Length: 92
Image (cartoon, rainbow, N blue to C red; front, side):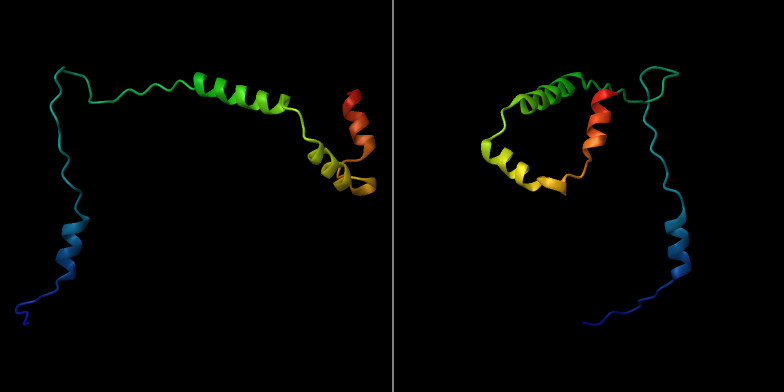
């Protein structure tokens, strides 16, 4: 395969690529109004669903195995929060 007349002109390529692209203007059916989109967000339903899911998990009973594992993990001085801090938080 033979390629003839292959020329690289980086300056003209740069000039061509650096020009801003012409914007395409679409006509508006109403005079004086811009073509804009309106988006409304309503997170009420998803927030209510997240709250219901968190409440159901918070009220679910803990398994005996989980309670035993936590009691063993935090037995003695292994608790990351001191008893004094817990008592102060309960009183405050």
